[in-house]
Length: 243
Image (cartoon, rainbow, N blue to C red):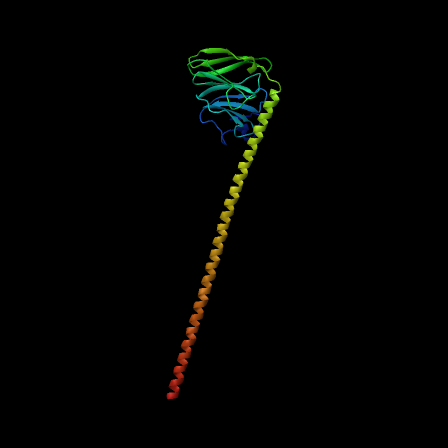
């Protein structure tokens, strides 16, 4: 859920549960990308997902990790790097600048479940020291290599372009799905109208048949009456001649 106190429309509340891609369990971490605030990271169940504010579905998702995820955050210095902690005591580091389908680095910190983490530094400096806490209250301080902390050339532009491309693709999918739903609704309404028209035609046909039957029966009755009158007239003539 996103709450904007400056937006009075819908009380400034936007809920990201209207489409596919949501987490299957509790979300344990939400963190905006430090260089692209429209994009944010969520961590829950076995995956991490990247969202954009104006979309109802995630634009990117990690593959399922082998253990339940417990926390996560972006690197303060590298736009394409984020960290996640796991229940099996492992910290995973993803580097989307190089690849999006595999973890860049994994490290076993402890046998206890990890519960939280924080990366030291700001957008200008730091990014190498990572504090990780477990469920026993132990904090471990790790240092990552320089390549995971120092921004790469054109990284911000490349990551922004990646997010923009994935966002456009997701918007096109949403528009396509909306168009399919609209088309199905129109077809359903058309079928209902066709059914109503058919019922109206059937009623008119039945009425016409009833009228034809009534006219035919009236004609037969009239012919029988004429025949009866003719027979009666013939009998009268025969009786008169005999007299």
